[in-house]
Length: 463
Ligand code: PLP
Image (cartoon, rainbow, N blue to C red; front, side, top):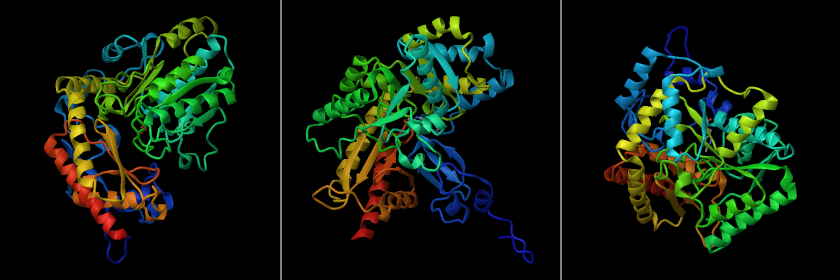
């Protein structure tokens, strides 16, 4: 508060509360200074971020699951700076283009082994998924199946925050107050093996496929256009697919001619140990969405990769609809494209996919060993360097913790005090971590130790 008799410069924290509308933050509490964990990040290097008061912590979330190569990569900074000098902006509408857009599109097609035929660039995961839905609708119009417009997503999937992508998102909190989801969007069950009654994970995978089939039949197969899913569920709880899941799901999609959109916004570029997670899980997607690790967040960039069926429809559709009437001023922004090219080069040259797989397996093992004796730890799971700890009430039987305890938020708060940024996820009691991919084994030891201490402190509060 500014006092007239003793003027005080308001803190950055106060100015932040007085000026910004923060995404996914409670507006009243934040404005009143009641949201714990407010932090103003000023700088970053490697796997660490430093706040405005000079306190440095390990960024166990790679920003928002995106800084795959870590902070302070001079090669990316130089690539952006050189691009800004040479050509800071040009559009790619109506036949225009620029070299970095071409090089990057070629590179992304090559990463798919040529299975994808064209690349549409945007700026965020949300807009890329929005593009995918327009492509699905366009495709079905062109092939003469205009009724096939419904989209099936999954409970606990996260696909973005625009009106359509928030609809696809299977988290009810993200719909509340916005008149969403749209009626064309349906949700099927999440691949959450931890809470499934089946002891055999393959039997659970089969039930997921059966549920999907049941929903398609209930809605009418001639009305269902596409299924969208993350290869590994991210924000909705970090759920690696149970064995046999993708095989069973794809069997159903093929049976009813339902297109598959793989939302790889988090999973690609090494996060789960592969350049593309579709390759790791045997997923044959018609459309693939990329963002986040595509540029490691050094500049905003996303991509919708278009497979052969949809590409053919785009060419055929031109005869009826004329030009492809979709795009953004900043599609294929030169700074984003330059950043992405330098970023992918680092991921490839430094073998970060293999490192994520190797150090990820080590970290998971560390966490499992360190947390095994804690009765509140129900599950420690992950793929590559995308990992989660799920908490339960002391059992048996397996039960959720009382939500009002806000246990995972408490763990994250203690982790922060210990020097690790981890994220309480928006469902159940789950803390997620997703550190930069050049994490070493000794970094992983530190992460595991800090998380162990934070969980022990939060657990002690309940006893
Ligand atoms: N899809 C997935 C799987 C995501 O995790 C996210 C963001 O976290 C999005 C889409 C939306 O991306 P953006 O926040 O860049 O719009």
